[in-house]
Length: 164
Image 1 (cartoon, rainbow, N blue to C red):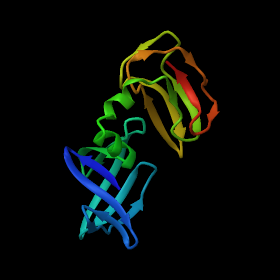
Image 2 (tube, rainbow, N blue to C red):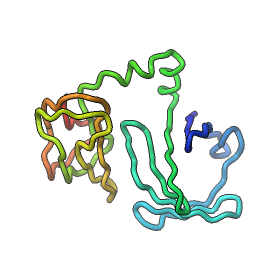
Image 3 (tube, helix red, strand yellow):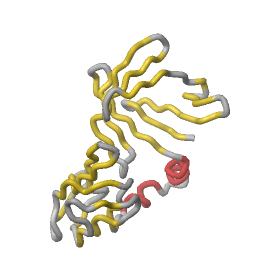
Image 4 (cartoon, rainbow, N blue to C red):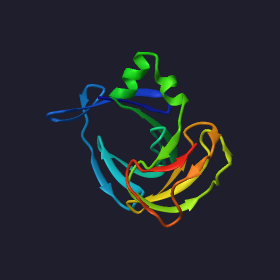
């Protein structure tokens, strides 16, 4: 089960044997990929054009433009929900020692250097994966200790890219 928030409106997503469920109800749609970042959606006889503006894997947030309007989506999986229920969600996010690659890809840009002081949300580097450039941002405040990747490096999922 996942809990998502779209523009501050919560919803639950689950995957049952008969397909996806949105807030416990069957969810059927037709999705066609137009470009690397653009999709056409048919849902309940309505047509939507969705464009992926930003994907932040560390914070589990997505910024979408749907029919010209920008929407912010946040996703929580069962582990996030469990930590939140136990009152540990902030504790788990407070101490970050490094930034890991969220997926395999190619480093196409590095925006920081060792010794730089960064704030949560600052752009650290750009990882190209699946023909999309992903802006990896600082998960918290800190000082860059070491950069373990260089521009042009191919990296694997989970590989440490920056130490704080």
